[in-house]
Image (tube, rainbow, N blue to C red; front, side, top):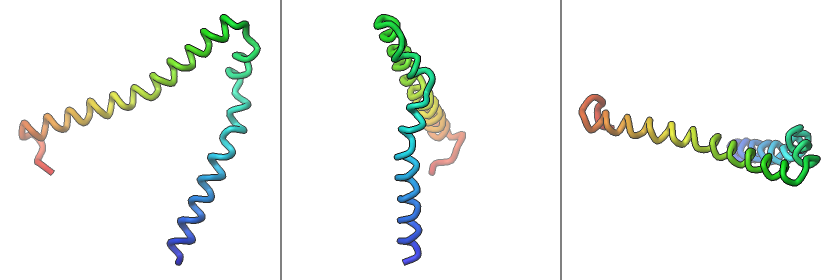
Length: 83
């Protein structure tokens, strides 16, 4: 029963945090500036935001892939023991 109550509390806290996130994003100065920009500038700014998000997602994925490959090669060459 305690475990269930704790899981419910953690779930409730997660929902509250996620629900309050849009309020913080409305205060973003870059988004406010993008809305007041000219149509051509807004398009370029939106493209910049899209590329920055892709880079922020791609770099960690690339680092994890390279790290996993390095570990795999080390295990196959005998430097690290097999798991």
